[in-house]
Image (cartoon, rainbow, N blue to C red; front, side):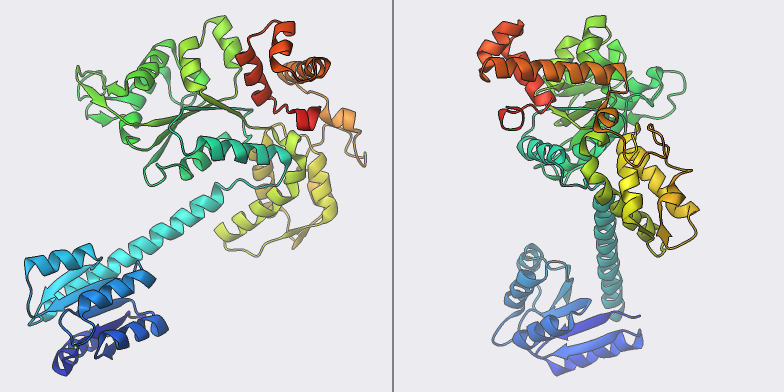
Length: 459
């Protein structure tokens, strides 16, 4: 389908000339003899491109261009003029014109401009579509109290440049939180660069993060720009930061302290302006005690610590998550969405989901592929979804469902219960409680944040 092009000019001969050029190429052409008439057609017909004369009686081209931009920022407008000057061309460009062509109009120049303008529009539309798809794919879904606390933390952290440390189990959604912080920050138009520190071999991670010069080590046949440089003015997400070697930790600390990196094989330092978000599923305080993680780096990273809850702490979000994944995979694979019965959704809510949201997502995809019918019921789940409790049990007892499954879960559960008990004993006086349990007040505040303990919910 050929593009629709509007020609706005008060000279009938110019309109006729442009129409002949464009219709010969198969374009759908409309005409307007004045600025107001052109604006009315744009509002009514939404053309793909506008040729706009700059000198017209009444409303001139620059006035019309300003009016167009007030209602449509993306419509490409090409200014045409028989009195072209550099000043006028610059002014038209500042107002958002795509191009400026002088009369008499050469057909080849007109056609090249049209192709360039339409190509740019197509690329912009594709970019917007991809961004929307990425936002849907990385959307945080749910209405639970635990997720609302995360959103509150994101709203507080996003507008700042403070480093954020995301704590939580594998698959809980730490990457989604990091992307949400970036998307809601002042750096949202810049790059979000992700590095999985656990997936890169130790001998390569420094090169990956900081870059290298050609010939700096065996195999370095080309210069490489590091991830910190790539993220300049944007955000870098260091996933699984607890897996970095001591040497790499020292270099990351330098970036945080000095705002500069040094490529391998280079003596020159490069200034970078990067917002750092880190994530880990490890207990970094325990790693510090063991000597495998630097305490100074930990304090640099955890300016704003955010604990991302496991799925078992937000079971009420599971039905919404399942529906979201069904819609997502159906759109991506161009297939009709299958429906899960209420009983099936309740069954999914009872599962343990040791792999958290990631495991749930993969399970939903497998269900959609392996279930032939339009409806998915409990019988379709039994072979795919494994229950920790006996599958025949209608509903495990709450005590069984919430019982810690790992040593770490037990320690966290016990520590939380201990803190709540002591806070109640001391009438929620933070200073007094910290003194009684023998910990600095700052550490107690950190624990309250970590375990989402509040007097309102736990008093």
